[in-house]
Length: 537
Image (cartoon, rainbow, N blue to C red; front, side):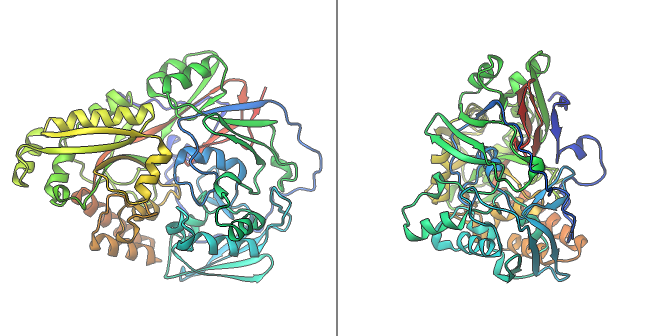
């Protein structure tokens, strides 16, 4: 595998990943146990309206799955949601947590309660106010499993929400929860108008996926299936220093990778969020395009349905890992823009520990299969998304597993269809997954994928992996208020998971984004392209 290139134009703002590229000694995903920030530097009495000009077009790798932050689990849709929705907290340029719709926050010493003081000058896109009642009713709704939200499990740590006054709210956890602050900084911990929520309560058929109403600098305008999602400026945005600078942003689904690149070069789109690796180097030397590349928070893997008889013996799962030449996969499919996975977590995630990875060894893989009772291999079905990148990964996996007698049929689905099938718990065999740890800490990287209580329907453990030791380690890590104890538990959990092999661990891909040079103030953080301050010359 060739050395990965890390380069960014001065027109890109490098956020969370910047600390890593610069060689900063601090983990970029580090989250303070508690923080109080009573300053309100982002607030101002300025009333001058920002001049809005230019329409920006963004090419996405797939159609949005949902414009409801509680019902969307794919990173592709986050590019859109980040323009319209905000939460109480966020990760800032240095990867540290800071208030957004809150003015400050405080985590109790025993890590069981988190108190927020809220901004008093915030309104939603429909003109309704933001306050403690909004926070409580939003969180009560999303964590109620009867409402069927895809993110319900994300908020399962909450025991209750208490309003002290209209602008003070406290979240109490079921048990000590050292990751609570990081969870509330995740993009899914965003808030929507109570007026919209009431429409859903009054009519269960009302579609919140298609009616996004948040507090961000842009508001929803239109969604034309297969064509685009359009957002336009929200003139009453609370942060006067950071109002929208574009007249509109269009997000277009373009599943064919080469088409995205051709459209960028022709000026038909301004930004490509998932730049094909093959084109990255070529575009870097061009005069009209800037390219951004850096390590990501993602891990690519093959999920294995451990409920099926043929996968119950871990020797089969380990054999499949030994059968994969990950270096070849990265070289041939990702053109060198990636790193072999040596943990279920990306190295950027707080709590990551390097583990012993599965060295490529076909003979050993065949021997293990034979010992497990499959000397001639078996047949398997591999689900994947229908985008260029994912199909290429699936075909490479198919080719390599065939070397040990496993005959794979690849079935490609539109991403929303695939997520729906996996989330509903429909019977699957193998599937290509890409997990991004949006909180940048270990609990959200491990619990959704490996905890026994997170199997479908509506949960992410789509391989139905059950290991009580892993459950205990994750719970112990979360309850620990001593960071060293927590880290020790996460270390052990990663070791057990790697040995048990519920995934074929593939690689951590690089983030690759390209834009036209006449577009400025584009940022990339948490693997998401941020356009709230972007403008077009």
